[in-house]
Image (tube, rainbow, N blue to C red; front, side, top):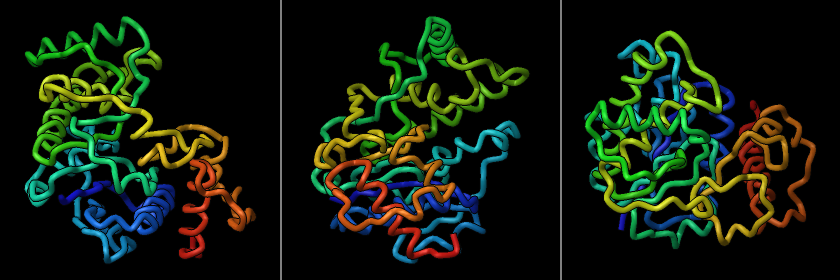
Amino acid sequence: MRRAVVVFVEDKRPLKLQFQSLYQSYKYINSKDTDLVVFATEDALRWIPQDCIKVEYDILRDPPEFLNYRFINSISCLVGEQADFLDEYDLILRTDADTFLTPAWNSFYPDLYTVGQGGYVNNDEVRENIRRVANHFELRHQGVHNLGSTHYGKAKLLRKVSRLAVSIAGYLLTHDFKNSEGAWPGWYAGVTTMYSCELAVNHLVDDFKIDGRKLDYGSASDDPITNHPHIHCWHTNNMFSKFQFEAGNYDDLSIENLDIDKVNNYCLYMALKSKDKNHSL
């Protein structure tokens, strides 16, 4: 069994802080079968550790609307020839930089293509638009909504999903959202990749599972980490908050006596340990 955790980063301070916390957790769990694969812009590659698999990747520019929607790069980086080596892995976890792995990752081998829990389909307007886009592309939609941003599955299938999702995202940004970004919680440009990945998975994957306890579990929880292999920093100011961490509001906290068996303390510990090793941040 060979697994890869795949992320994309640019040379921006928030992403650097987030990635270094993820990297700290990756080293901590000491997985025997998992590589951390980092697609990064040229200027970001210089601070990616050498024991990661590092791939230079420039931001997507075609169509030009992608320049103002950088989320697309965390998906598009898996699509081109530069990512063909990923087919050699059995399983891929495609995720964002503002995440953590816990020791539960070392025993997490789901039978089905698995995603986290999303929350972007909140009304009939969104459901009807998703149905319309599915019909436009002649896609099967199984009626499953609110897939999370992190995907975990067989390498070739996950890359196939990513390829279709990029095409759909390009269509949405150049048609639906060309002149207006819409409005949350309705049909909204800010979650284009969430719509696109939902459409791609429903079409390409016969059996898949939404499991918000295993993937994209919130970093502010005090649940035991034993239940949650993958933690995601959502928009919160509660402990653990990526925004509070970035602002330096945790810098004076001690990691001594932290109960790192709890999700929020585990994230705090990993983040502060990573910052301690990178004093310039």
